[in-house]
Image (tube, rainbow, N blue to C red; front, side):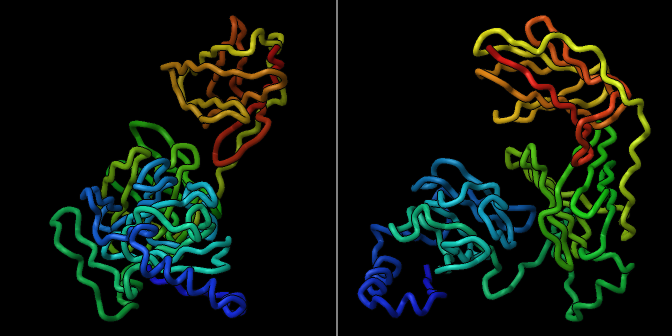
Length: 363
């Protein structure tokens, strides 16, 4: 791992500290244990793009995230807790620049090999990072049908002349019976004609690609306009790649919300008995969701119900969600039915979800 200090003034204040740090980073295999290649062959890839794996504990254990090329000015942008990075796997095509502070500030180090366990200076101290191709050389991207590399023109403007749709202006693509469209500056929706609609947040875009992430499930999408395909990574890490059949650069207008009468149905008493309770959530058709503020998990469901258990004492906000204002959503708790009725005005509308907030008093 190559270490370069950005804060030269701080480095000059203590030559001894600098020498000790350099010794840790360059000469201590027991402390750093950086190794080339994945020792277990478990290399993760995003289609043909290699992924860096980051871990919360040493020896590649604990919470794990697989991230692709890009800049993460805070660890939360990588879906990872701040100051918790302890080990990392870096494939041969990539290198990682780690920083002690957010927004790529403070001391930094360049990592181009696996690190089984960071030394005391870096362990649980990384706050932002960049994932880059080695020497800026991006490997050839392969056609998912023929598995042969796409030809790359020596003229970087060659792709722009095809139809004018690039990663900078793309707003809609169609692939494999799905429509992925931009609904506002940061939000996208994926219309799957078999599974309904999913919402994605735009994380990053460049000239050739757009990177999206589902804030609830942590699923990821990459629209590659150079390779003309879409790569999907499920929450469990399953990678699928599909060729784009059509694309558009016109930003779709935010869908108008239909006018609905300003009413709320009669609700049961919101007092819940016991510190722990069970709930059952379902819809009369359509997609619904439920979550309890301050508790982990956002759960989606349809006619097939979702059942869960919550433990709390005191006031608790239950959030009932739906993607269509005409959907009826029901959450049953201790024989009481809390309903987000058809046409009922929402308390909030975010990421194409209509949201109703119900404050419960758990005793």
